Length: 291
Image 1 (tube, rainbow, N blue to C red):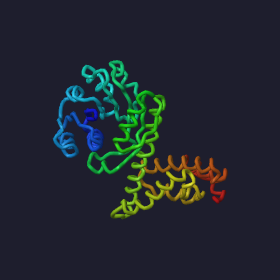
Image 2: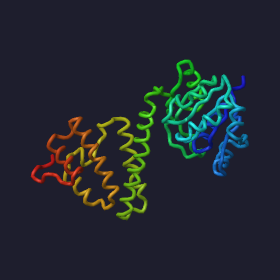
Image 3: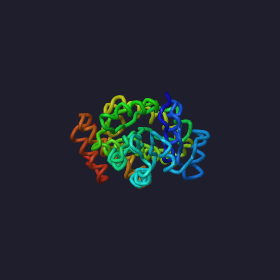
Image 4: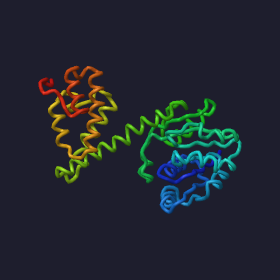
């Protein structure tokens, strides 16, 4: 039995990769909408000679429609394709922030709607086809089987996210990935300043181990001068960081680390107070000794 035809609206880094995964699972790709030369080249690279068409044409030719467009464009794209959506179609988007509510105009037309968000960063290349991930799914109970089938075809596993929790879910992913990238880039900037030719090579073993340990052991994986109560080391760090933006980030993350370390009993009240005073005001009482 032939599987449902899939159409993808949007050809950024995510849409063509998901289409390629579904194609590998024997879903026929009815078409992809792509606006730029770069996105069309991406479609050709990942999907070969599939039709590239306007969103309306893609929707008309598809049984399953994948909306892979920016979060802020979702509502306008939904309005654009609504005249071509028909009863019985399945429409899902890949946004982390949005749930089903943004697709309500299509649900009112008889479409089965859901949010299926890959918790993964994408390059938009064949490299992404080697990486499996978890998908955050928001759907009606009666469409859960369909969602599970699609996620399995995409090579992933799924977790159910309530509509009301969608933004918090997305915030967690952004905080744990995008902001980590910013911190690592700042650390590489500092290493370049002290002469490291390949700062990535210096940091990779340390960062990889720190991330793996944190994902496995949570706060028990915290190490470094804050959790050890090394007030003077933190003071020296702040004095050595000449970039104001990096120093501000260091202070903010050190403050958060102090709170977590104190909460689990790794820091005594006195040392925690010294560190907190230091990272918030730049001054720590010199008469107290860090343990």
